[in-house]
Image (cartoon, rainbow, N blue to C red; front, side):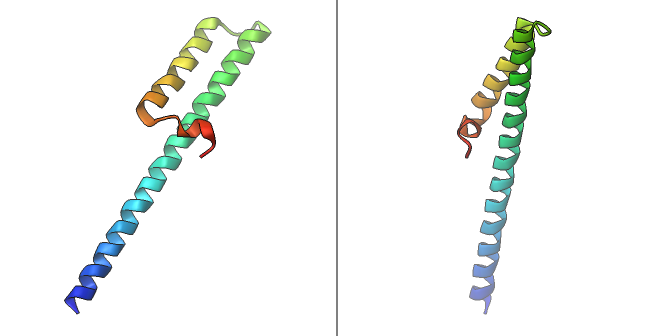
Length: 78
């Protein structure tokens, strides 16, 4: 009986770990998507004459920092 409970506990722990990893991935993707949206808005504003190259550069740096910290998976729609 103890062996069964140990296996069930181990399986539950693996499920929790996998669930947390998936939540982390989703949060990283959402953060990356938000940064891309800000970059697009900054670029659009710059092209329309109401934004600045500095704002676009800052938004690009934020995207690059996110990629360096979390990878570029969010860029590929994963």
